[in-house]
Image (cartoon, rainbow, N blue to C red; front, side):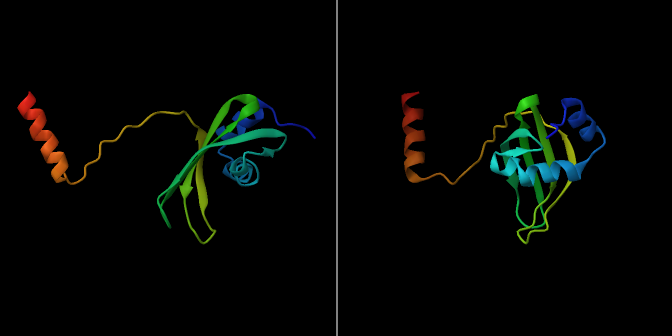
Length: 115
């Protein structure tokens, strides 16, 4: 078996060979497995339900390259990726809100009193 080189991988990204990376994901990365002689590890996946965005990131361990696939998701099995690029990790913090309970209000008042 002839293992694909790092340069060939980068060239496939540059040429936007989505089909190659989609197959790589389905046959290898989705199972933290091997594909084309390369050790793959799934890093992250998110979808927002039928007909909505779907993003997948996986690592080609041998070359330390993170791949990001973007597309749309279908629970009926006809999901599709339409973009491939090198991925980079980042952190995202989000502040959310919920209705305050009586206990929350009590604690806020105690904090105000204690100053």
